[in-house]
Length: 217
Ligand SMILES: [Zn+2]
Image (cartoon, rainbow, N blue to C red):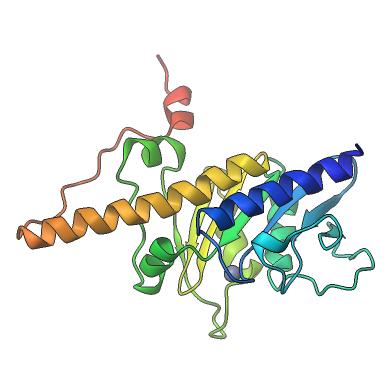
Protein backbone atom coordinates (compact mmCIF):
# COMPACT_ATOMS: atom_id res chain seq x y z
CA UNK A 1 0.00 0.00 0.00
CA UNK A 2 1.38 3.42 -0.86
CA UNK A 3 2.32 5.77 1.96
CA UNK A 4 -0.37 8.24 0.90
CA UNK A 5 -3.06 5.55 1.08
CA UNK A 6 -1.77 4.53 4.51
CA UNK A 7 -2.09 8.13 5.71
CA UNK A 8 -5.57 8.36 4.17
CA UNK A 9 -6.66 5.20 5.95
CA UNK A 10 -5.33 6.51 9.28
CA UNK A 11 -7.22 9.75 8.82
CA UNK A 12 -10.43 7.91 7.87
CA UNK A 13 -10.11 5.66 10.96
CA UNK A 14 -9.49 8.64 13.26
CA UNK A 15 -12.44 10.54 11.81
CA UNK A 16 -14.69 7.50 12.29
CA UNK A 17 -13.53 7.13 15.91
CA UNK A 18 -14.32 10.82 16.51
CA UNK A 19 -17.78 10.38 14.98
CA UNK A 20 -18.49 7.14 16.89
CA UNK A 21 -17.63 8.90 20.15
CA UNK A 22 -20.02 11.71 19.14
CA UNK A 23 -17.26 14.29 19.38
CA UNK A 24 -18.19 15.42 15.87
CA UNK A 25 -21.45 14.65 14.09
CA UNK A 26 -22.86 16.38 10.95
CA UNK A 27 -20.33 17.81 8.45
CA UNK A 28 -18.54 20.24 10.78
CA UNK A 29 -15.05 20.06 12.23
CA UNK A 30 -11.97 18.95 10.38
CA UNK A 31 -8.80 16.94 10.79
CA UNK A 32 -5.50 16.75 8.95
CA UNK A 33 -2.15 14.98 8.94
CA UNK A 34 1.28 16.04 7.70
CA UNK A 35 2.78 14.07 4.78
CA UNK A 36 6.41 13.37 5.66
CA UNK A 37 7.83 13.03 2.16
CA UNK A 38 6.69 16.44 0.91
CA UNK A 39 5.71 19.84 2.32
CA UNK A 40 2.01 19.03 2.26
CA UNK A 41 -0.91 17.83 4.36
CA UNK A 42 -3.92 15.60 3.91
CA UNK A 43 -7.17 17.20 5.13
CA UNK A 44 -10.91 16.52 5.22
CA UNK A 45 -12.69 18.81 2.72
CA UNK A 46 -15.58 21.13 3.52
CA UNK A 47 -19.09 19.63 3.56
CA UNK A 48 -17.98 16.03 4.20
CA UNK A 49 -18.82 14.45 7.57
CA UNK A 50 -16.24 12.69 9.73
CA UNK A 51 -18.16 9.47 9.06
CA UNK A 52 -18.09 10.00 5.29
CA UNK A 53 -14.34 10.47 4.72
CA UNK A 54 -13.00 8.22 1.94
CA UNK A 55 -9.73 7.87 0.04
CA UNK A 56 -11.44 9.71 -2.83
CA UNK A 57 -12.64 12.83 -1.01
CA UNK A 58 -9.63 13.69 1.18
CA UNK A 59 -7.60 16.61 -0.16
CA UNK A 60 -3.85 17.10 -0.48
CA UNK A 61 -2.70 20.68 0.10
CA UNK A 62 0.87 21.97 -0.07
CA UNK A 63 2.03 24.01 2.93
CA UNK A 64 2.17 27.06 0.63
CA UNK A 65 -1.61 26.71 0.18
CA UNK A 66 -1.64 25.07 -3.28
CA UNK A 67 -4.55 22.62 -3.41
CA UNK A 68 -4.28 19.50 -5.59
CA UNK A 69 -7.14 19.50 -8.13
CA UNK A 70 -10.30 18.14 -6.47
CA UNK A 71 -14.03 18.35 -6.97
CA UNK A 72 -14.43 19.23 -3.27
CA UNK A 73 -14.19 22.63 -1.58
CA UNK A 74 -11.31 23.10 0.86
CA UNK A 75 -12.14 23.24 4.55
CA UNK A 76 -12.97 26.72 5.85
CA UNK A 77 -10.32 26.10 8.51
CA UNK A 78 -7.58 25.17 6.04
CA UNK A 79 -5.74 28.42 6.82
CA UNK A 80 -5.15 27.69 10.49
CA UNK A 81 -4.23 24.05 9.83
CA UNK A 82 -1.52 25.11 7.33
CA UNK A 83 -0.22 27.84 9.61
CA UNK A 84 0.09 25.54 12.64
CA UNK A 85 2.14 23.05 10.57
CA UNK A 86 4.34 25.91 9.34
CA UNK A 87 5.07 27.35 12.79
CA UNK A 88 5.30 24.07 14.75
CA UNK A 89 7.50 21.35 13.17
CA UNK A 90 6.55 19.06 16.07
CA UNK A 91 2.90 19.04 14.94
CA UNK A 92 2.15 16.02 12.72
CA UNK A 93 -1.65 16.01 13.00
CA UNK A 94 -4.56 18.25 14.03
CA UNK A 95 -8.07 17.27 15.16
CA UNK A 96 -10.60 20.11 15.36
CA UNK A 97 -14.15 19.25 16.43
CA UNK A 98 -17.27 20.83 17.94
CA UNK A 99 -17.64 18.42 20.84
CA UNK A 100 -20.62 19.49 22.98
CA UNK A 101 -19.30 19.62 26.58
CA UNK A 102 -16.16 21.54 25.63
CA UNK A 103 -18.02 23.83 23.25
CA UNK A 104 -20.52 24.52 26.04
CA UNK A 105 -17.66 25.87 28.16
CA UNK A 106 -16.30 27.78 25.17
CA UNK A 107 -19.71 29.35 24.55
CA UNK A 108 -20.00 30.38 28.20
CA UNK A 109 -16.66 32.17 27.89
CA UNK A 110 -15.04 29.81 30.41
CA UNK A 111 -11.63 28.21 30.11
CA UNK A 112 -11.89 24.47 30.84
CA UNK A 113 -9.89 23.81 34.04
CA UNK A 114 -7.20 21.12 33.86
CA UNK A 115 -8.49 19.46 37.01
CA UNK A 116 -7.56 15.80 36.69
CA UNK A 117 -4.09 14.28 36.99
CA UNK A 118 -4.32 13.25 33.34
CA UNK A 119 -5.09 16.75 32.06
CA UNK A 120 -2.41 18.29 34.26
CA UNK A 121 0.19 15.81 32.97
CA UNK A 122 -0.83 15.68 29.32
CA UNK A 123 -2.17 19.16 28.60
CA UNK A 124 -1.22 21.60 31.36
CA UNK A 125 -3.45 24.36 30.07
CA UNK A 126 -6.04 24.73 27.30
CA UNK A 127 -6.41 28.42 26.48
CA UNK A 128 -9.76 29.85 25.40
CA UNK A 129 -9.29 31.68 22.08
CA UNK A 130 -11.83 34.47 21.41
CA UNK A 131 -13.78 34.91 18.19
CA UNK A 132 -12.20 36.91 15.37
CA UNK A 133 -12.12 40.67 15.93
CA UNK A 134 -14.48 40.83 12.94
CA UNK A 135 -16.98 38.72 14.92
CA UNK A 136 -16.61 35.56 12.85
CA UNK A 137 -14.96 32.20 13.49
CA UNK A 138 -11.36 32.09 14.67
CA UNK A 139 -8.64 32.00 11.99
CA UNK A 140 -4.86 31.66 12.09
CA UNK A 141 -4.79 35.33 13.20
CA UNK A 142 -6.23 34.37 16.60
CA UNK A 143 -5.09 30.72 16.79
CA UNK A 144 -1.43 30.73 15.70
CA UNK A 145 -0.15 33.17 18.37
CA UNK A 146 -1.48 30.81 21.09
CA UNK A 147 0.25 27.77 19.54
CA UNK A 148 3.55 29.61 19.10
CA UNK A 149 4.05 28.57 22.73
CA UNK A 150 5.48 25.06 22.16
CA UNK A 151 3.97 23.79 25.43
CA UNK A 152 0.40 24.32 24.13
CA UNK A 153 -1.11 21.12 22.67
CA UNK A 154 -4.81 21.87 23.14
CA UNK A 155 -7.05 24.93 22.92
CA UNK A 156 -10.72 25.78 22.98
CA UNK A 157 -12.34 28.19 20.51
CA UNK A 158 -15.02 30.50 21.94
CA UNK A 159 -18.51 29.69 20.57
CA UNK A 160 -16.92 27.15 18.25
CA UNK A 161 -15.03 23.99 19.34
CA UNK A 162 -11.69 22.47 20.24
CA UNK A 163 -8.22 21.90 18.77
CA UNK A 164 -5.90 19.03 19.72
CA UNK A 165 -2.48 18.68 18.11
CA UNK A 166 0.03 15.82 18.23
CA UNK A 167 2.94 14.18 16.48
CA UNK A 168 0.45 11.79 14.83
CA UNK A 169 -3.29 11.41 14.36
CA UNK A 170 -4.07 9.19 17.32
CA UNK A 171 -2.21 11.53 19.71
CA UNK A 172 -4.18 14.52 18.40
CA UNK A 173 -7.40 12.48 18.65
CA UNK A 174 -6.63 11.44 22.25
CA UNK A 175 -6.32 15.13 23.14
CA UNK A 176 -9.67 15.90 21.50
CA UNK A 177 -11.13 13.15 23.69
CA UNK A 178 -9.40 14.37 26.88
CA UNK A 179 -10.60 17.95 26.29
CA UNK A 180 -14.19 16.73 26.01
CA UNK A 181 -13.88 14.34 28.97
CA UNK A 182 -12.39 17.13 31.11
CA UNK A 183 -15.18 19.57 30.25
CA UNK A 184 -17.73 16.91 31.25
CA UNK A 185 -15.91 16.20 34.55
CA UNK A 186 -15.57 19.93 35.28
CA UNK A 187 -19.30 20.41 34.74
CA UNK A 188 -20.11 17.56 37.15
CA UNK A 189 -17.66 18.92 39.73
CA UNK A 190 -18.99 22.47 39.50
CA UNK A 191 -22.63 21.35 39.58
CA UNK A 192 -21.99 19.24 42.70
CA UNK A 193 -20.00 22.01 44.40
CA UNK A 194 -22.76 24.54 43.68
CA UNK A 195 -25.44 22.13 44.97
CA UNK A 196 -23.48 21.79 48.21
CA UNK A 197 -22.82 25.53 48.49
CA UNK A 198 -19.07 25.09 48.06
CA UNK A 199 -16.50 26.83 45.90
CA UNK A 200 -14.21 24.70 43.73
CA UNK A 201 -10.86 24.05 45.42
CA UNK A 202 -7.60 25.29 43.90
CA UNK A 203 -6.28 23.08 41.12
CA UNK A 204 -3.33 20.83 41.94
CA UNK A 205 -0.10 22.22 40.51
CA UNK A 206 2.51 19.64 39.74
CA UNK A 207 3.15 20.54 36.10
CA UNK A 208 3.01 18.58 32.88
CA UNK A 209 5.14 15.47 32.32
CA UNK A 210 7.39 17.53 30.03
CA UNK A 211 7.88 20.16 32.74
CA UNK A 212 8.59 17.51 35.36
CA UNK A 213 11.19 15.90 33.09
CA UNK A 214 12.98 19.24 32.67
CA UNK A 215 13.26 19.84 36.45
CA UNK A 216 16.69 19.25 38.01
CA UNK A 217 16.76 16.02 40.03
ZN1 LIG B 1 -15.00 24.37 13.42
